[in-house]
Amino acid sequence: MPSDLAIGSGEIIDQHSLPGAPRNQHDVVLYKKNFPRIYLGGGISAFLNEAVVATVEVKSTLDQDGITQSVNAARAVKELTASRQGSFRPIANYVVAYAGPANMSTAFGWIRNAYVAGQLSDPQFEPSFVPRNMIASSALDGVFILGKGSLPLRE
Image 1 (cartoon, helix red, strand yellow):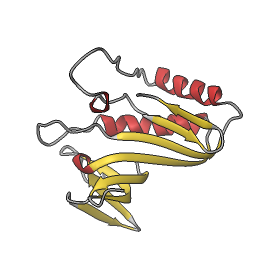
Image 2: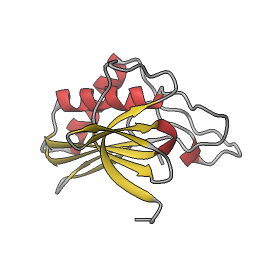
Image 3: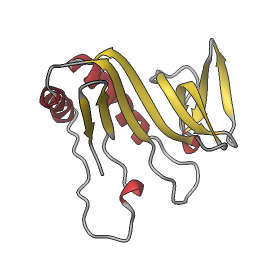
Image 4: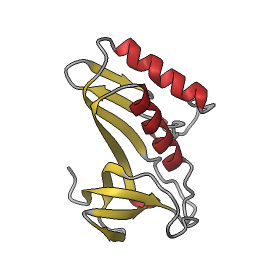
């Protein structure tokens, strides 16, 4: 891992976040060390959205409810506002599960169900001068079930 990055756990905030407002707590937050973070206690911190590179939700056993919760948490992160103009790379959101369905197609169906319920769709990658990693997905960027497979949700 690059020396300018660190791993933490906690909430992600933007310039419009209010104290005490409900926010998702992320299991793993990969963030840039040169940005401030707010220690909330109990090993939990609040991270500025511009500092966050990626989040990982860890699930013991992946099911439809876990996917729905992860999609909603990722969507909330994607909707945060940058405090300054610039070309910030979108925050990548992943799910890693120790166990899950017998077939990855089942997990894909759960993702599709969660996207339909949330009225989400991923961007169409049309020819442009913008690298694909600079185009935000609607929510999740990948789902990994150990020993089963992966579902990269964008290239």
